[in-house]
Length: 116
Image (tube, rainbow, N blue to C red; front, side, top):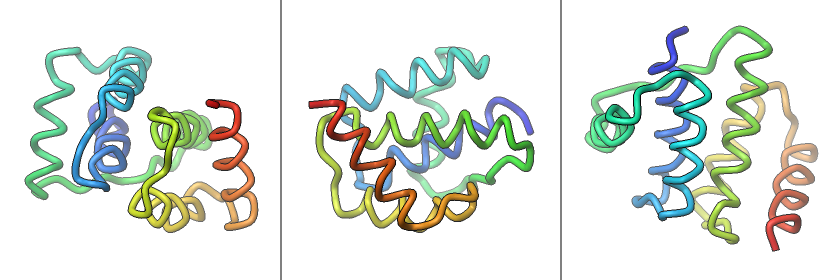
């Protein structure tokens, strides 16, 4: 799975509530750098995902999945609050990462508390 494809998962999550807060954009920028996505591609990918023309796939590789899941958690708590749309998306996507609802709730709440 390419860096762009992995980044699309995060872009889809970032746009779930209809906008990308500046704190979320900062998380996306760090994740893009770690993944090897060129900085100039971030907004292009966000725009493509926002138009709905691009699907995001969960990586099969356990290591890649773990990194993306951690970035998803960071993304959702970046602005210190979790919207209803973000929460719904998080609980819907967590099982695809091997995380059950109880674990997902604990992870998300702990990350949010740590952010405060």
